Amino acid sequence: MRIGFLSTRLAGLDGVSLETAKWAAMLRRLGHEVFYCAGELDAQGPPGVEDPLFHFQHPYVQALQRRFFSPEGDADPASLRAALETLARQLERRIAEFVDRFRIDVLIVENALAIPMHLALGMATTWFLARSGMPAIGHHHDFYWERERFARPRWPEMLEAYFPPTLPNLKHVVINRAAQRALQARKGVSSVVIPNVMDFRQGPPRHNGVSLRDYLGLSPEDLLILQPTRVVPRKGIEWSLELLHYLQQPRWQRKLGRRRPVLVVSHPAGDEGLAYLRQLRSQARRLGVPFLYIAPLVGERPGRGPRFTLWDVYFQADGVTYPSRYEGFGNALLEGVYCKQPLLVNLYPIYREEIRPQGFRFVEMDHRVTPEVVEGFVEHVMNPRVRRETVEHNYQVAARVYAYENVLPILEDLLRF
Image 1 (tube, one colour):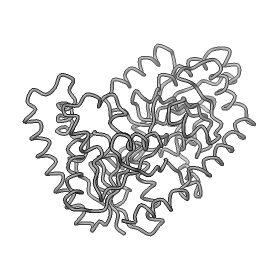
Image 2 (cartoon, helix red, strand yellow):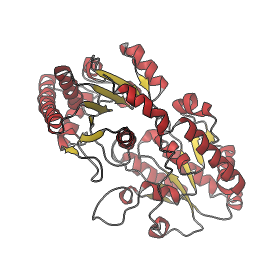
Image 3 (tube, one colour):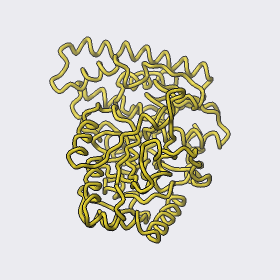
Image 4 (cartoon, one colour):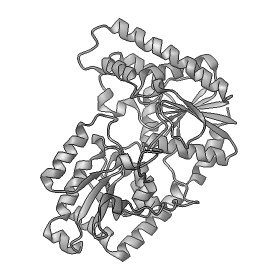
C-alpha cells in the first residue's frame, strides 16, 4: 500500500519524528511505500509535501494558539473561532491534495490528533477523515490532559471533539498502557499499545569518524556526560547539572581519576520557549559546571558547517543522564541502551510502571540527586566490569522486548481495514 504520514513536524530529533522514521522503516520492510506531509521535513526523509502552515511554530498558528490557551480568555472569541475554522478548511484542502497527489491508501496521523500543538490541524484532519472515510491510524504520543499548559483552554469541548476524535475509520495507537486506560475511560475508545522500539537486528550505525570531542575542545580526559533530550522543563536537566556539581567534589574526583565532567545537551530548545535554556545556563555558571548546548551541531543542515549525527554524540559519550519528570515512553532511554551506554534514569511514572519491570539495570533516582545516586553513576561509568556487564545486559533485555520484530505483526494487523 501507499501510506501517508501526517504531522506538524517530521524532522529533527524530537521523539515523534524519530519514532515516525522507525515506523516508516518497518512499513517499508513489509513492502509498503511511505510518504510524508508536515510543516517541516528532513531532506533525507521520504518524499512528500512540506507546507509551513502545518508547523506548530508558524507565527500565525502560534498567535491562534496563544489566544485559545490564554489564561485570561480571548477578547473576541467569535473572531478566534472563525479564524481557526478558516485555517482548518485551508489545511483540509491541502491534506486532500497530498492524499490525491501521492495516491495514499492509509493515513497515519502522528500526534496531531492527540496533543493540541496545532488546533486547526487537528480540526482539519478530523474533518478530512470524516468526509473522506479514508482508513487512518492515529499514533498518539502525548495527550492534552497530560500537559499542564493545555489545562485551561478557551473551549474544552473543542479539545474533546478533536483530540482525538472518535471516527469509525480511525484506529488508535498509544505508546503506553496508562494512555490506553485514560483513552478508554475518557472516550470509550479502545487502542493498541505499541511502545518505542529500535532496530536491534541491525544494531547502531557506525559513527562517521569525525571527532566531536576535538570540535568541542574537549580532551580525552574530559568525561562527556550526555543529556540526549530537548531542552524543555519536564526533562529535568537541572538534576543533571546537580549531578555534575557533585562529581566535581574531591570525594568523587578521586574515583573519576580527576577527570573533568562536562554536560553536553544534544537536542534543541525552543519548542516551549528559551527561558528554560537561559535558566540552565545560569545554574551551570552558578555551580561551576561545564555546560555545552550543541543542538546546532547535531542533525541535518546541508551546507551550514560541521554536523554530527545523534549516533556520533552517543558513541563519544561516557555516560547518559535521563532525569525526566514525565515521558510518554522514553525514546532516549532506548537509544542509550542501543548504544551501550550506562544510564541514570529518574523514576518517571511510565518508566516505573512499564519499563522498570522488564529487568533493566540503570542507576535510578527518585526526583532528587543523592550521594547514593552519584555513587551508583560513578560505579557504572568508571568500573569497567560493571559497565560492560550492565550495558550488555540492558541491550539483551531491550532486544527481546523493544525490537522491530515485536511490532511488525501488529502493524500488519492495523493495516487491515
